[in-house]
Length: 222
Image 1: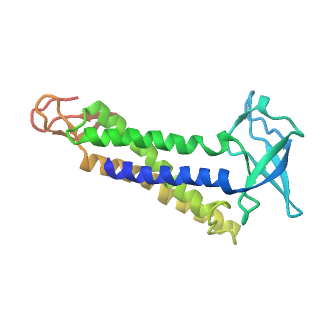
Image 2: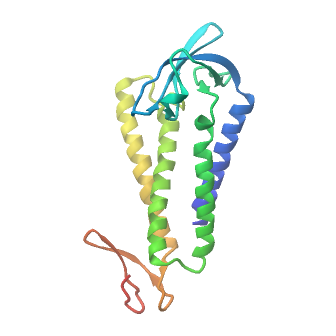
């Protein structure tokens, strides 16, 4: 648990630094809301158009926003990296900070579980931690996938649309499921649950579709 917790801490710090550096040092320009792109009755992802050096650009917001916050023709402030003016983002808390804050909170929870795991975790908490690690592993895999295959990242297959699709599928299958299952496998191997009766290790097994913990020492089933 300390290893994924430490890795997540580094990722959280990197995300916090990335958000802070963009807010502090990105160039700014004026943008105009041209479409709301309502996805639910009260949520939207507005389209923002802006111009840098005479070149027009158009972006969508990253997060969902309330339809009450935007109107077509509304002026907004757009932040963009000087070397990549196409990566504009509106100057909004919701665009930069929720994900880094979420990662920081999860990191603190993992650090607490790592401390508790030194003396063993109850089966229920152990199972919940395994489920959480599967989600975090999938998120880590998705981060790698997005870094390699999206226009905002390296976009390694950009030159060929067919190769882009096939390679994207292979990279997705090789990152998201593998990272999720690998995280759970390492957790089960190195941090077993502990029996409340005898204190022995309790391996996880499956009986049909049910997750079962059975103590190898005293035979208690949990």
